[in-house]
Length: 365
Image (cartoon, rainbow, N blue to C red; front, side, top):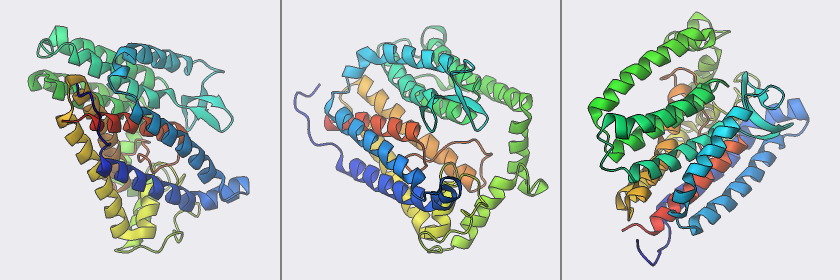
């Protein structure tokens, strides 16, 4: 472990700042009409986003100064706390139902979403667990199975809310971390088949999930029902053209696209800023993921490498799914766009995680 730390990865830090600024601008632009109609205040959503961005930046700066190895000893405790919160949120009268899911703890419009924090907690724990069992990871029962058991238990609790989107991101990031740790592809392939079968079962068990699949395949089969969001999203992206209609000039945010400041905020960005604006944002995310991968490769130890992999995977998987949904390439899953979409828990969690990633970059070889 290097005794001296260097400056954090400047390209990563710059990408984070630029994405965050774009996010704040777009939250205001996408939510102003909705906020005025519902609360009589066009700044209702962006004021809260700025508050959580401030908290997140504070957490990022703090995490950037704390040596990442500190979290290794706290990882089991953090995971247990998140498991407890996932159980508490399921208790009627305590957990708050929003959007059909009992996934919030809090009062009124302020609250936390335990499933969001479980994503980072699982990555922290698996990084510790696997870094201490390098010789066992290729063994199915001693290495891979316990890791999958922790991940599967967390996924099951998240699905009881239910929150398929967050669960998929956590599983995706965890599987990528396990693969990088050295798990055999044959083992992961076998588990993937079981996972696909389970996912099919979950879809069949919940009619609304099946409707999302059919809407993805043919949204025009139910244009006013299950296909409505995808159709309205494409109606936003299409007219944007090369340069867009202009910042603040979106038409779909006038009560056509539901909750435009959250899951489908990329649609509004593409409508107002066009292909150039959307491509610029994607390039910034690619820079962030690239520097995250570089940090993982150059990390001074196995724990740092796995932790950087896990955090980068959370960002990458979430961006891939969100934009895939928005452009009609994936079924609707309810996943926000990192650092862009409105949401306090997600924004604070991601900035905290990125602060840890920036700290790892300070000790890279």
